[in-house]
Length: 59
Image (cartoon, rainbow, N blue to C red; front, side, top):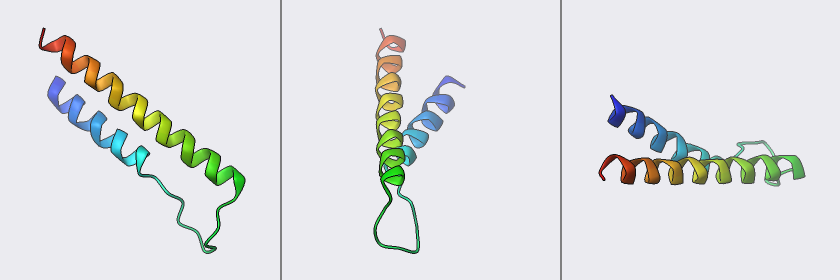
């Protein structure tokens, strides 16, 4: 069960890190850029948490 959670968290992390707005226009608004960067940072944070959780589990 813990490994299933870790797999799901890592998938979520990758999805957030790779998130982009699909819009009609080719340029993004300031808000879209801020949201996209925030999601990328949040995804990276989730990945770091999973890395630490993995290290703790295998001590």
